[in-house]
Image (tube, rainbow, N blue to C red; front, side):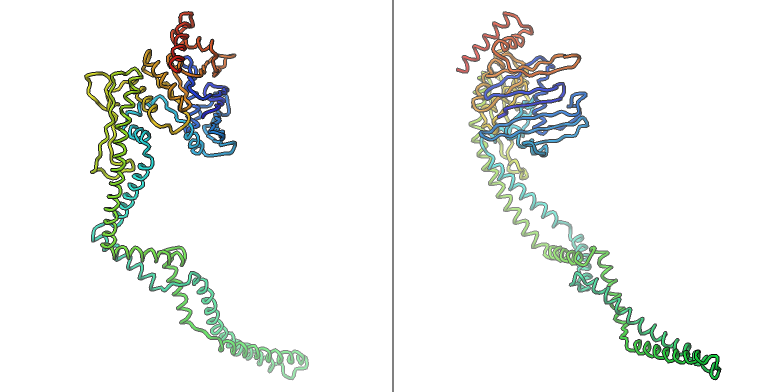
Length: 534
C-alpha cells in the first residue's frame, strides 16, 4: 500500500507530506486548490514524462517521494525533475531508471485518472478487463508466444521468397564469390604476416646477387687498376717509398674485399619467380579483403555465410516446403490456443456481465443491462491478443437496445461502469487511486458510488479525488487540499480532517458555504454512510 507521499516544489506545492491509511481515503478541495497535482505527482512515479513546467517557479528542482509497504517489505521511490527538464529516479536511495521505478510503483498502485472511463469504451481495454476478471494471464501468454512464433515463420518464408529469375541471379553471384574465395585456398588467418616476412627475405637475396656483383666489378675494374697505376708511377721514388708501400697494402685489401663480395653475391640464392609469386599472393589477398572483409578471418567468415546462403538457394524447394509445413503446424497450434482462450473468455463473460449489471444497479442504474459479446474470428491473422472481438454492450433504460458501451453511455454512466468493472475484477495491486471518477453524477448516484468505493476498500487501499460530498462521506479518512497566499506566494497544503473539520468541508461541498443547515446535511450524510458500512 501507499504509506507516505512527499512532494517538494512541484507545481504550486512548495512542500507537502501526506501519510495514508488503509481503507478508503477521500481527497477534496475547492476547484484549483491543487488536487490534480497530487495525481500528477503519483503519475510521475508511475512513469509520466518529466517536464520543466512541473518545477515550481524559482526552484532548482521538483521532487516526489513515496514509501510503499508490502507486508514486512518497504520500498522508497523518488523522482526528481530539474528546472531544465532533466529527470533522475531513485530506488531505496540508489540511482535507478525511471522505468524501473515505474515498474515497481505500478506493481503497488493503479491510477485510474480522468480518462480511464473513456478508455473503457475501447475494445482493447474491454478485452483486458475481461481477461483480468477471468484470470487468463497464462492463456494470453501462450497465445502471444504462438502468434509471435507464427510471425517469425512468416518472415522466414518471406526471406525465402522472390521469383525464379531473381533467385538465379543471386545463385550466380553467390557461386562466383564462393569460387573466388575458395580459389585462393585461404587457411591461415596470419598468412599475410608470413608473406610479408618472406617477401623481405626474397627481395634481399635478389639485391645481394645483383648489387653485390656490380660492386665487385667496380672494385676489380676500377679501383684495383687505378691503384696499380699509382703504385707504378711512384716506383723508385724515395720520397714516396712509404706511400708506395701503403698503396700496395691497400691494393691487396681491396682485392680481398672484391673477392669476398663476388663470392657472397655468387652464393646468394636469388629466386625472382618465388618473389613474384609472393607479391602476387599478397595482392590477391588484398583484393579479397577489399571485397569481403577487413582481414583473412573476416573473409573466411564471409565465405561460410556464402556457403550457407548458397545451400539455402540450391535447396530452396526443400527449405520452402519445410517452412510451409512448420507454418501450417504453427497456425494449428495457435488456433488451438486461441480457441481455448475464446472458450475461457466466453465463460468469464457469462459470469462477469451479471455481476457488473448488479453493481450498476447498486450504483443507481437499476434498469441497466450489460452484456459482454465475445465473437471468434477464425479467419483473422494470428494476433498476440487472440482471435476474439470483445465488446461491452450496454443500455441504461428500459426499451432501449443494447449497443456498444462507448456509443451510448454518458460520462456518468461510463464512470459507474468503470467502477463496477473494478469492483467485480480481481485486484492486481494493493492500492487503487481514482481521480474524479464521480464526474457527471450526483445525488443518489454519488452516494451509491461512495458505498461501492467503501466496499472496494475492504480488499484494497482506495484513494479518491472527488467533488461530491456523497462520495467523500463514505470514506474512512478525509484529506483536504487547500490553497492559500502567503506573502505573495501561493501555498498548497494537504491536511487530514478531524470530525468537526470534516463536517465543515462536506457542508462546503454541498452548498458552497459553511452554514448550519449545510452542516446538518453533512452530518446526515456521515451517519447514512456509517450505517451503510455497518
